[in-house]
Length: 214
Image (cartoon, rainbow, N blue to C red; front, side, top):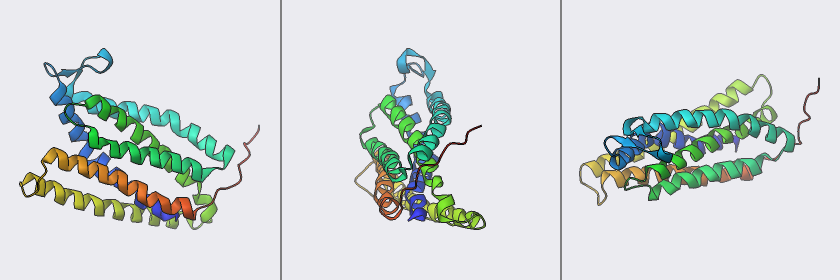
């Protein structure tokens, strides 16, 4: 059950973060730009720099959020609840890219920030189980298996989405390339949501950990 969460979330990392989302958000910003600039919250930003700014802001938010989530996991022990909230927030946010088109770069940017932050925070919760399911000498092996299984799942979905994109680009489907990209992104959210059911059903919470004093 623990391995399967890597299978579930890696589709977001491969299909969304690595391949499709950066070019798609940049294209949305280009469409909405006036004289080459977009103006989120009134701040002029070159359309081509919109996505790099989002990445930097996301990284900052992750640095702030992950320690808080880690402390919450240790103090409450309610790992399944936290994993479910984070994973399904991320999955739903990813599937909402279905409506991100026609220059809606601000909505796309907001969804990017939400999904990337909850994605990394869900990994914090996921990793909290490792000391409980594997002894000290087993952890590298168990962690490596989870990583490998995750990239196998993520790679399979990415391969299917690349085929979809190629067929759409060749005019062999009744959808255009932009729609094929949105379908691909949404599929990663659906994949994440479906397979997260396995760890939520198969894993157990742990007693809260006492904080060290002194």
